[in-house]
Image 1 (tube, one colour):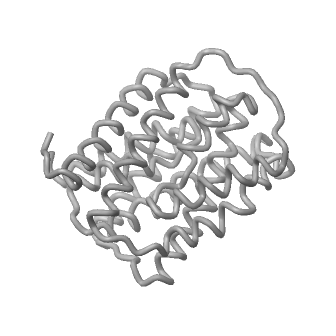
Image 2 (spheres, one colour; image 1 turned 120 degrees about the vertical axis):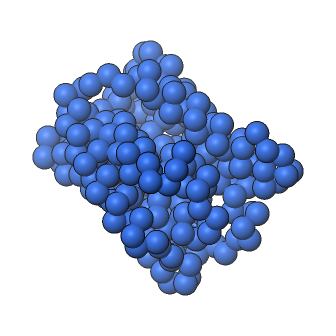
Length: 251
């Protein structure tokens, strides 16, 4: 696939991910890693696209009174500074792609679990449990360049914290604040880098896709099959990155 087709691909990714409360960071990283070699540029680009998509979703969830700050603040209080610190971690190119590959594999597994799970119950978490979970995922999101919602949302669903729509609203806000925090961390660390021409095209694509996806989310549109296919793609790219950069094996 040529780089000229990236805006179309990213439009579709944003449409799907925003429909389930995500920003798409894992798939942006997965696709960009196939076309770009500068890992600073890959991480910076993915975070900006995340922010564009989840800003729309967050607005929709707040407008429809799904977002509840009283329920959500413990998840955010440590995730924000930890995402900032994680983004400042200077990794070698090999180490970054190994971490990214592992993060993508985890993301793919969590996504599969989210979409194959049929029954959702609900139970409350203590604030310390929310704080620890949010901080841990925030640190991982900062290091890998993923907003973190793709880890948080399936974990909360599997642990039966709340109904999927409430979890999706938390994931959207979680991704937004951690992506902004991570982006600031990259800038402070001097590792923020962009291809401005490509960036403009991708922003237009994900804003369009994110707007449609957020509308579908509000309508409870079912994209389960596409979600499973996306999970498989993320798993494949994660495995490919680890084999290629860790063991020089191409698949």
